[in-house]
Structure formats: C-alpha cells, structure tokens
Length: 332
Ligand SMILES: Nc1nc2c(ncn2[C@@H]2O[C@H](COP(=O)(O)OP(=O)(O)O)[C@@H](O)[C@H]2O)c(=O)[nH]1
Ligand SMILES: [Mg+2]
Ligand SMILES: [Zn+2]
Image (cartoon, rainbow, N blue to C red; front, side, top):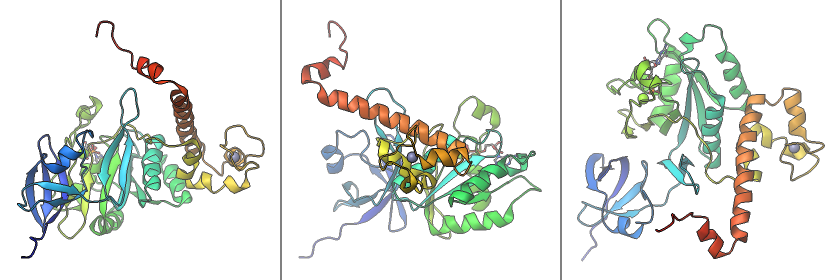
C-alpha cells in the first residue's frame, strides 16, 4: 500500500474561525482546529499569513506547520510582557510605504520597518507615495537619504496627470517576482498603488476623513495571488513598528550605515551614546549619518537597554517576588 500523499498549502488569510489556504492553485477554507492547534494552544495564533502548512489525509484540516524561512514581526502594542506580532511569514520583499504628504513622511516608522526586514534578512525597499503633493520638494531629501544608505527607493504618484509610469513598471516587476508585504501608515496610499499596478485588483481605498478618525479601510490582512505571478500582502496600516526583543548590541546592526562605522569606534562595545572616540557620533556631527536615522537608532537602543535592565532585575528575583509583581487584586 502506498501512503496517500499529504498536500501542502499556503496560508493566504486568517479569519476568526477559518483560514484561507491555497492548495495546488485552488483556494480552500479550512477550520482553525485540529492537531496543530491543540499542540500549540498556548500560542495566541500559531499560524501567520504566508505560512506553509501540510494538510491531513482528508485534505480538510491543517496538520503541520512547515518551518518558516523568515517572519516579519514587530512588538505588539500591549502592556506588560513583550509579545511578538507576526505580520507575515516567508516574505521575500518588504516594501516600506510612506507618503510625501497627508500623512506627513514619518522616518521613525520607515526605519522600524526597514530594520525589521534587516533582522530577518529580507530584502527591503522604500516607496514614497503622493509625490504630486510634494509641492516644496521636501520628500526628495528622504529619497536621497535612503538611496545613500543603499536602499532602492521608488517615488510614485497615482493621481491623473501625475502618474509615475516608469516607477510603476519597476514596482510591478518586483511584485510579480516576489512574495511582498506593504507596510506603512494607514492612508499612505498602499491600496491605491496596488490597484493602479495590478489591473482588476480593486482593493478598497480609504477616504482621508476616515483615516483622520483612525479607521482602517483594509480590515484584514490577506496575501493576494497576483495574475502574472507573485503574491502581495496589503496590510491595514501600522502606526508604529518597534522591534520585538532586540538587544542593545544588536540595535546598531539594523542600521547598516551605523553598523559600518563600528570598527572605527575606539571601543568595540561602543553603543554610540557618549563614549569617547565614537565614530558614529562624529559622523552624525558631520552629517554623514543623518540625524533622523540616529534618532531612530537611539530610541531603539533606549528601549533595548531598558528591557535588558528589567530582565536582569526579574532574573535576580526569587519566585515569590516575581508572582508579587503580577499585582493580584485583593480578595482574588
Ligand atoms: N494626492 C494623492 N493622493 C493619493 C495618492 N495615492 C493615494 N492617495 C489618496 O490617499 C488616500 C488613502 O489611500 P489608500 O490607498 O486607501 O491608503 P492605504 O491606507 O495606505 O491603503 C485616498 O484618499 C487616496 O485617494 C497619490 O499618489 N496622490
Ligand atoms: Mg489600504
Ligand atoms: Zn561608537
């Protein structure tokens, strides 16, 4: 007797009770229940969009989560113990998307997304949208900055009469060759750009009044198979992108231009704060390293140092104190 061959699938979308899985080019809706979910019941969500899974013999349930090549994740915005929020697994291209105006360009968010990609060794690029709104030419300095670091930067506008068709071609080619994720503020123009690049996609577009009220137009995250090849994940938008459990020493390595200077610092353990003979501080003073990048690095480093201090405190505690730290309500 030959073993029935177990089929593999790709997780496209996860809803409350079911998940959408692509198997042999077809879309299946499978329950979020079964062996895998029992084994990993301690995890809030054992699956992520982009995961490869193995189905059971019936082909109607997910049995096994196949190993991830990478996972783009950030620190979940919650109180207490740090938790990871996996945005997508097995992504081959991270596209940080930021608008030139409305909402204004936010370098710290861009740096967070790019850093998240560096940590997982996922290639990344920057898309600056709404170039038609950049009347004063302020976006050009950001474009130049990220290019000088070595990132590919695409400057786009989708507005009639101002379409950046040459850039569209370049981004479209990347989308068809990759499993990409678009990451940026809500209202940055991610869905509009995708609709422009991929005929027939018709993702919902947000009105600016909705966006100002903090409403997302893209409610769920879904990995969309593209006619012509590739997959793209249009995220609802992130307001912040902070690293999950990053160490103080590791922080500099997600800023390539800062890491490159470390060998020139006087101390090998230099964290580029106030150490004598620091090549990074000198480069910031001479504007070789951009102050906004250094600010993003400093914020990340401060957080890393704070949580390292907290952990060493917790590790030094005895069990009783640690439980006490959970702050039980009187009477419970
Ligand atoms: N002026 C201008 N507005 C744009 C451009 N791209 C998108 N928008 C507008 O920005 C708003 C948000 O777009 P949307 O694609 O929903 O943003 P998302 O939340 O990042 O997906 C909508 O009102 C779009 O019409 C652009 O290139 N130029
Ligand atoms: Mg959208
Ligand atoms: Zn230094």
